[in-house]
Each structure stands twice: as structure tokens, then as C-alpha cells.
Image (cartoon, rainbow, N blue to C red):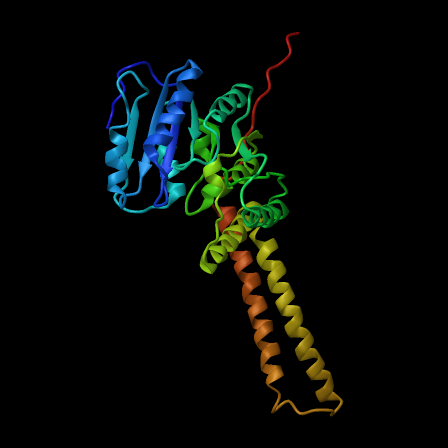
Length: 320
């Protein structure tokens, strides 16, 4: 692992490597060449999953004499990409933090555009591959995914899975990243009230290959979208989610038992052999329980310290 003895870095370029990473030395060389043209102190930070020790050994020797310092961290076990990214942000020494992909996804020259957008006042800069020239199935999958994300988040991002992103380091550290939330960083940052800017960047030819996943991967992505739906819409209002769901279930149960009750009063049916009655009662009880969960969530939220607060900036006063 290389240690810096030069000036304090102004830009920290971070990369979390995974099992499907590309040629990391070539990626490092390409981004280091662009970083050298920024005319400001730069450092590279790599976080390697503990199962990929060979990647860590190769990256530790990537810092060439006279080049930017390279710091390599290897986790003891797999903690997930989002947690590894949060670790990199915590260890970053620069005022700005730029996350880069572990494969050739976009042109490295776009690094300068990301830094320029941060210098212009953005808190978070996300990129979108434009024009998209990869396989048609890839683009269709992306459109469906982003249509769902736009629907639940009310944000108009076009390519939140593009991994070249820029942050003010203090902002990056305030994002609560865990699990697979790294894919939804633009949504989470916008929800906190940070200024998020999206810029187009050229796509690399290596990123144009067809990507087809197992059904379990698509199921996990759908669960991730539902996770973000709850985080962005109902974290501070749990009763709205659980109350609405419980109310619907209770109304269905009440409708079933009500119809059966009227039929019994009119002598049209007997309730001793009607399994539908059991279903109605079960739905009534289930609805009350779901509403109770929402009420408990509201009480816990009321009694807990307020952590989910929007970012507030005090504007300078005009001179009198």
C-alpha cells in the first residue's frame, strides 16, 4: 500500500471493486492520466472485498513513483458495495470525493466534467451514459427500472446505475449507505435536500455487451425499489403506509362479514359451513394488527431523536 508524503489531497478518487471487476490496473492508469490534468492534489482509494485478495495485491503496487498516491483497503469479509463505499468516503482525505466504476463503463475524460460541476456549486454530481449504444435489451431493462424509480421518488434521473459520481466529501459522509442502496445515491441525496446535478458522459465500448441476469437478481432489484419507496415516502410517516394497507384489508374483511351477516339475518344462508366467514374475520383481525404496527411506528418515531432532517443553508445577509 502506498502512503502519501506530498500535499494534502484535494480530490479523493474512490473505487469499490467487486467479483466482476475489469482490468483494475488499466482502469487506474486511465483515470490517473486524466486526474494528472486536473492540476490539483489527488489520491486514489480502493476498497477490495476480502474474498478478492489478488485484486488488493495488484492495486497496492499500482501507485507509480511520481504519480498520485494509492491507498488500498481490504475488508475481512463481504459487507456489501454500499458499506464499502461508505468506508471509502470516511477514509477520504480530499475535499471532493469522486467514485469511479471497477470496469470501463464511461470515458475517464468525464472525470474533469464531474469535478467542474462540483466546483460550480453542486453537492452531488451523477452521470448518465449518453448516447446509450449498448444492447437493446440493456436499454429496455434500464428504462423499466428508471420508470419505477421516477414513479416512487418523484425525481427525473435517467441513469442512477452509472457509477461515475462526484460528491463534496462532507455530503458523501452524511448519506446513510448500506445493503444495495449505492444504486440509489442520487435519490437519497435529493431526498436529504442536497443539490444534485446530472450530466451526460460518453459510454465506453466495453459497456455495450448484453447483460441478462437470473430471475433472482430481478426479484432483488424489485425489492430494492420497494425499499427505496418506503425510505423516501413513509420513513417519517409510517402510519400512512401501514394505516392505508390495514384499512384496505379491514374494509375487505368487513364487507365479507357484513354480506354474510345480512344473508344470515334474512334467513338466506347458514354460517356453520361458510369458510368465507373465517376469511372475513381473519382479514378484520389482520387489518387491525397492520394499523397497530403503524401506530407503534409513529410512537417510536415521536420518542426517538430526530435524525432525518433536511439540509439547511443560511443565506448571507445583504449589506445595509
